[in-house]
Length: 132
Image (cartoon, rainbow, N blue to C red):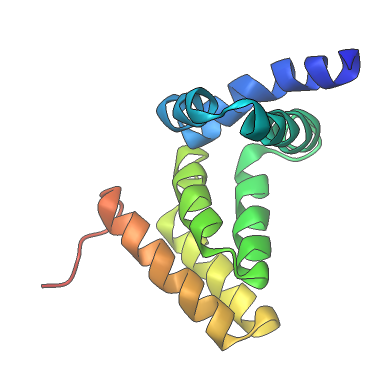
């Protein structure tokens, strides 16, 4: 348990920086005892262990995440990680290139869903303007 506690403490500030403190804190506050198990798992493993490894920078991790989430068809997570990618300095052009690369390897339907979701987030975040 001590290792998990250490990973949780390591991962929590990273998770807040990438996804936004408001989002993370709301997720933690809403969690009952049952869901807190998942909050601890994701914060410890994904954010403490994976994101906390200094080998790859956050920008690279964000690009990888967008490609993997596109491949898996996890569109709500794509939306969340587009915001994280912007926070990590990934440009709109780099996001577009990542999704285009995913299209070649994951298929057009998966990439179309990711492009649509990403477009929605980029507009909402003011990273691009909607066409009138």
